[in-house]
Image (cartoon, rainbow, N blue to C red; front, side, top):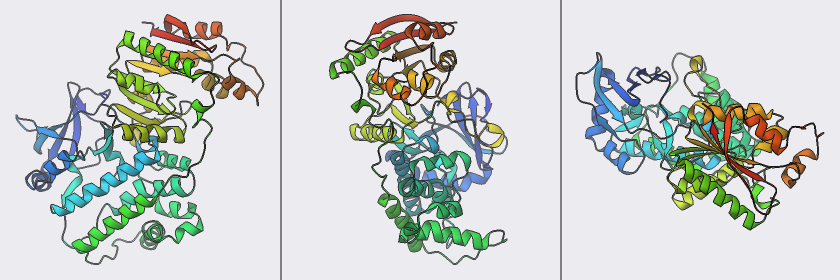
Length: 460
């Protein structure tokens, strides 16, 4: 995990739960388990649930910290340190789906051990070594006999509603999670669904009827509840799992999802470009790389192959989906595909803007890749080259960047529907703009094209 600005002290996003909180000490993260959580925590550890979840890669492991306990603490633990943090509105469809299925599997295992998830927040799931993993050890409670699943509504708002809207309406509706930080309201999801989908049994049960129930009992002090047996609860989880598994992302083409199928350079040039990237990275030897505009992650994998952890981001949901599915198929463990629009990256969100860090804060890296990207920012988005350079310099001390000239078919594609007002968009103008923040270490031509590759180092 990237250390927060507060290297020693309480994590600013950890304040909602009286069972415990997260804090930093010397750049390492810890969790204080307070006295109210004692019985649940001890059952988690003694029942075999913790060992089962850790063995299956569903929960971060931790170790108990010896020493004097702070006032009000039952125990202090040091969880596994996470290499990167991401949020559900940055995930592809399949990432969110896998996170949902992991949450349901965790709940199923918890029920078998006499426990239940007391919250089902998507923000409690992180991708570690390529797989979704629960990071909140205090999410478990002793299951109250006869009580319904207290986190059912939260699961539907955080997982099912966005998945349904992506599958049945538009993949871009995932971004509603940025607006509704506590999950997409079910009445809103129900209104957005096409009428035919409201009649689907699973969707009707968990979205439409659930939303109707919420509206009927909104504002009441007590909601009517019948006793729920363990069998009924298991049936609910099974129904949710079948509904989630049934959802598929439509095979729609997007603007840049097939980018590499329509470039104007040959396979040989593509291979040359890969060798240049590999050589530049070998000179830097980064441990952490952010690939800005990664498309399907072809060049991210060069950095990952050299042992770096790579945050592989792109604006196109189809490209990010392909990247993630390829990562799963290959069993890759040091790649994190993310959906990020660099012209509007994920901001700091939540209470006082402190609950969710911005992408810029979380994307800090030893090196950045910006390949086949500069023309999208400078021409399509009309961002001045100097401002692009300034932003890149805020992320990394080392930059591998590709300049795509106006003679390139991809730039011609962008200029086909707009006036060419970009007089400074030349190799000379590009180098001059970046010179304020970076020094050029090396410049190479991509054989078979007019594109240029640069290795840059941030000025002190």
